[in-house]
Image (tube, rainbow, N blue to C red; front, side, top):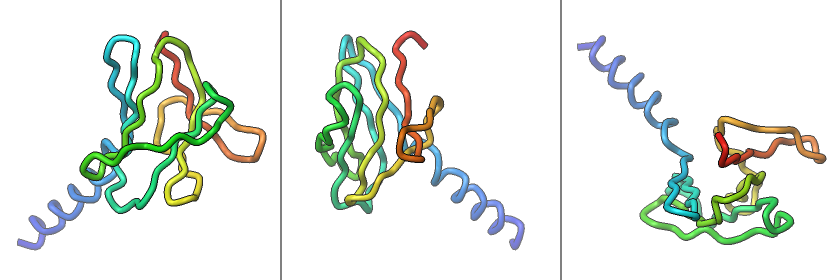
Length: 107
């Protein structure tokens, strides 16, 4: 019984971090999705428009922003007013001592 509890606990911790950030591409558009059900507000800042924050729409605890998918860009989120960098496959250092995610449609 103890082993079963430990396994279920470990599995819950493991899965809680999975799938918190992903994107979908539909034609020339991509929708970035951030799963943060506890957040009160989420903004996306990206290089496509000089990092001007754009609001994400809350869809059942998943925050979504749709952007053009034709060219690459850098991005990060602001969750409840604080910078947030999700687990993304490509990152680079920014000019402020932090990092930004990179989306490249060629990859």
